[in-house]
Length: 321
Image (cartoon, rainbow, N blue to C red):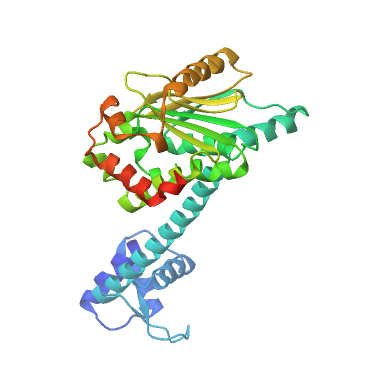
């Protein structure tokens, strides 16, 4: 800034290009008793030229002249602005790449690998807290849905539909694809699914909802058993793999769950599943629901979600029911 200010002041009085000697003498004349070396002045002058704050009239060192005025100042500021934006953009891209890498890491697998490397023995975590719907989906997908194999039973109980509605089209499709692996899914929801308000249903595209409903109806009895739980039954909201692994909802806003294994608390898992199985026997299979059942469930037969189900049943056709 000292060199830049000196050049601007000189050229206010003398707009002609300046030689290095003129600049050097002017810099040393600014303050009496101070003497700056030619190397120091030359280095800082070069930095100003590199930033386009000062313009040169020749590439030859012996004939090089320097210009510094409002025009070069504007050009230099423009270059500094562009260079800074580019640097920050590159930093953002690098940061995003790091964030993506960190998000892709599975804490469960990483903990097992570190434990094995440090102790020489293999072990698995028995419990952890899950915060947010994205983490809940990621962990249950990896440890339950993707881990399920032929003969396994996945139980899922949903009592608060609103907890899952945002981004549902990216998450719930797994209950249709997982049975293809040979696992059985017992999926229970409350009658609240038919009572969602317009603001909630607006978060889900109608065409996706209709397609998903048709998919459920087509998979019903083919590895998927989707049922509606009767009113006044308030069980546990969870998803489990057999009686070995369970993600049990603790709170809905924000979404928080406890991921536990049988090793951590076998009684907890057994009690939750026993409660689910009792309610399951009285729940209504989605493909067997009748108009009079909606009254029993306390649902308006003219509601939006009922119309979606009826359209799905019509698309399925009587031979498939």
